[in-house]
Length: 151
Image (tube, helix red, strand yellow):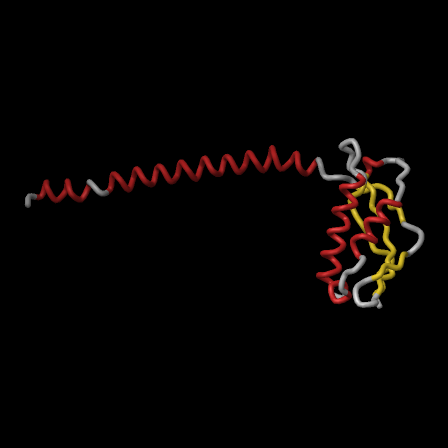
């Protein structure tokens, strides 16, 4: 084998590696540009659409709800309204009804752990938000327990 043949064979693998490196670099640059565009344009819109806290409506009376196996829950809560709700008069009867439906018949063991309480609270909040969103207006954004006693 001559010296020229050895040089030709040695140079051949370098070209595909060089081409592969260029392709990888181009993909990384395009991906980074796309991620940057998403971060500045799309994520910025989502942050602006987040609701702003408004008034808190406290449900005056605590309620006693029957749990499973002759246990009960004494529950009181308040609704965190959005600024978008403004001075809208809110009838809390539906929120109370949804709370009773949510907790009636639950096992006390579910509510004695933080994880169980948070799960039940999140489910209740989801139902209340759905019930109080009228005409594409987001009225309720949070739920606060003012009393939570199990026995």
